Amino acid sequence: MAVAIFYIAPDKYKEAKKVVESDPYETDSFARVGYKLKEAKTLGLDKEGYYLYIDAGEEFIAQATKKLEGVAERKSGEEAESVKKAVEEEEASASAGIGNLFG
Image 1 (cartoon, one colour):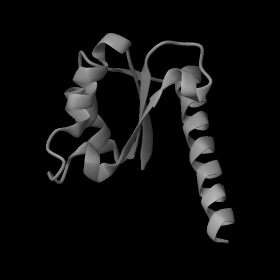
Image 2: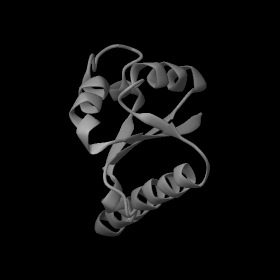
Image 3: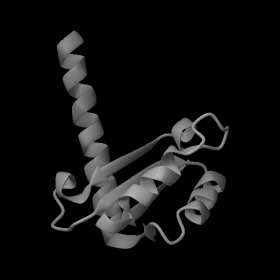
Image 4: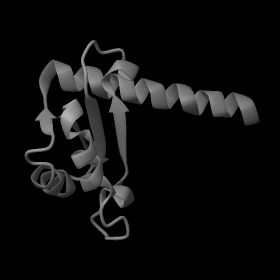
């Protein structure tokens, strides 16, 4: 499994959302693989726009990159790492909270 981070400009949000929500029952759909779509500000970043976090196989990520062409920009380096870390920390703290609730 690999993680891919995509940046979506505010004016491309609706278009990107349409892409990730299309054909939810297909075997290679975003819905089946799972994704997280987060507003940049909620991740503590001083930037307008959204980030798409995908944790999937390399083959799906390659397909996703093609589907998102012109709508989202795949990120790497420091920006991608900070988004990845923020999403994973948010997920871990949510899991811990549920554990405490039902623990």
